[in-house]
Image 1 (spheres, helix red, strand yellow):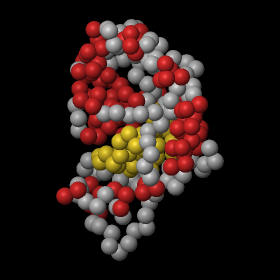
Image 2 (cartoon, one colour; image 1 turned 90 degrees about the vertical axis):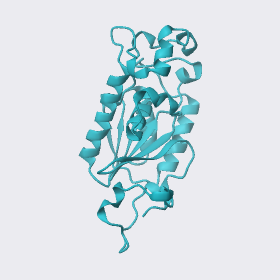
Image 3 (cartoon, helix red, strand yellow; image 1 turned 180 degrees about the vertical axis):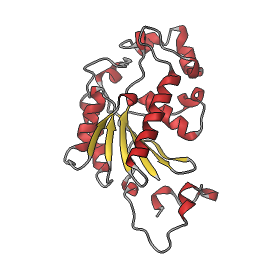
Length: 237
């Protein structure tokens, strides 16, 4: 079972101003964003991360650097497939202005049909495909029992969560992913389990591996869903 922590970068000035940053260069964390990520780093301190894989964009690179401060043993990787949606002509524009565009209704209610306008505009389907492929390939590279973090962007994380939940992309706007939040997916042989979503303050120490005991469940149990809801992921052995 490979466990992935999907971390959205901390708040930026663009977030605060209601600007769709996209791949715009030089979008950095603001003071609030740095504080958010520092708090998350404290929560993640007990978790023995195998690696942190990050989007190449500055706001994610800064987030990853704060998470890794004082933890030189954790590998840092970069993957362009985990970068922001390429919003094309929408990049750098105010969200309140974009909300008046006819295509806004498409991205809200039928995102699987949305390709952003402009020469470098990307479709939401292509974004989800590249992001999910990246996560699956890193899962295979790190192997079973690994716990690692992916630092990425709101829509990208929502798309990965939708895939793990078995949701059609057209429903992914029902998922909320706040700045500096962490969402946790455990990938097993049979199915992924979404353990946390949009967590901005919970105790994450349960992600540290626990010693196996003689009462360890049968090998296939990690892939089985708990009938009746179980005792909770934080209590799992």
